[in-house]
Length: 241
Image 1 (tube, rainbow, N blue to C red):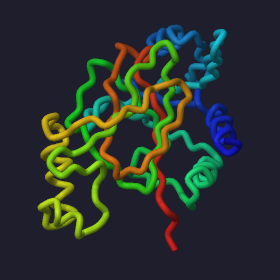
Image 2 (cartoon, rainbow, N blue to C red):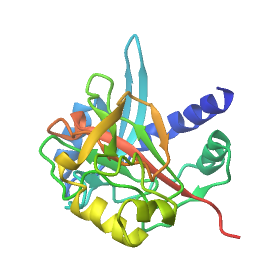
Image 3 (cartoon, one colour):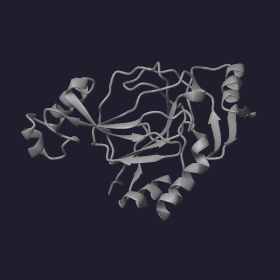
Image 4 (tube, rainbow, N blue to C red):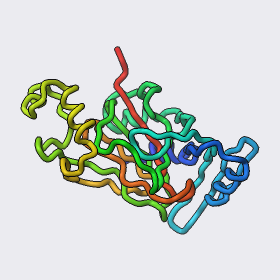
């Protein structure tokens, strides 16, 4: 619990530094979005937010500069990465193994905003890492859904097998063959999966998961930056050597 509190305190310092992407906003648009969050835009075009209620306090610094994108999954990643000093060390202590940030071509240290209208090409998937993390950042009154986990109906697998013998038992010739069929071909077919659990979205809740578990983000919600599904993404690998 002490280590978890350390992590939450570390993340709380930066939780507001979530970067959210929208396509080339004008200054007036940025101010409007920031107003909707109850904040003010500073000289660096960063929205500074401080919000309190009887049950929570939010301190956030949110850059308002985005690229538009259409990817495998619904929503848009932030253009910038928010690097948190000490994050890998704290997560390593939590999970009991040494970890470092995944290579830059992944989405580690980026934020993701997903609205109800956003659509993607993929659904059930696995990640290329040793541990994945999701920090929920949507305001408490906006939170919906969460992170969903699945079981593959035909094989009964709750996760992607890490053993070649198990791969063959499932009727596949190789790891790549299994990945192609289960993720690329069947990942979006709801009839192939049964949902096993959901980790509900709560503001400032951190979810650490083994990335070979079949999972997907819950549905997007909201219609703008102020009330959409906002998360901070983390991917960790074991250090080389």
